[in-house]
Length: 325
Image: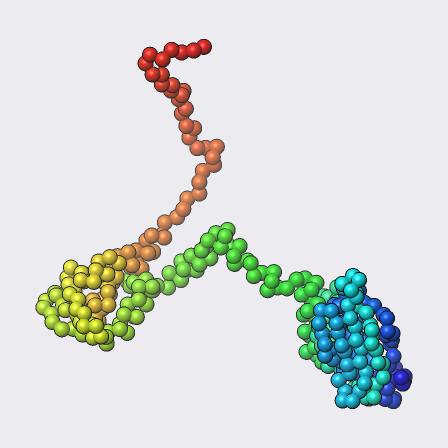
């Protein structure tokens, strides 16, 4: 293996080759597969080559150098004695590729940077910026990373230190609904009610009527007199009788709901009628405001409540029953 000489002032390599740091030997063991995967990435980045785990299973790992024709490879397998210790059984530590002279190893992603910087961020999370992370990784790990990678790594560190914001607050709406169901929704509706037309209908009914107006082409007005009208369904040929004076329809939806049915809308839309006059007063904006106009007075202190008068308990004895002492 060749050893690289580094100019500590200009931080540029002076010859090709691979740095040998924390060299592996056959028979070395790692506590578990998670630590081993992190160690493989650290080893490749420190030695300035891109490695790839072509076999990455729960009980074995085979890592190779991605450079074409490079024979470097390492193989680990889980020990059967304990079921979690990983042992290096095959290791060919020969490189025929040139080392990365630009120090821009793509294995140094945000996940790896976050793992390296986590302990530092725990102490300096308030002052550490992405540029500080870039400088620290360049000085200590000899790797050049982008600003975006440093930014993502910083966010990952903060999430591990303070917790993920999405996970932390995702149950808040459920909690609010359990504490006071529909409270926020009702407050919002009451605030919006101030903008409603005092002489009109509530928005929910207005939207319903607008939807029925879109359905007018599917209905045909056949016959009428001063108050009675016959409406025919163009598709099914069903007929309905509408009385606009008594506000009744043979479909009975008008009478049951208090809102004009689609058959009445066919007639009233052509008459340019005021929808408020043909809907129940329960759907007027003025009625809605009147219902919520009053104030809820605070309850008195329980100590000031009137004391109930308790009478002695009554005992009923059947006739002819002898009392026993």
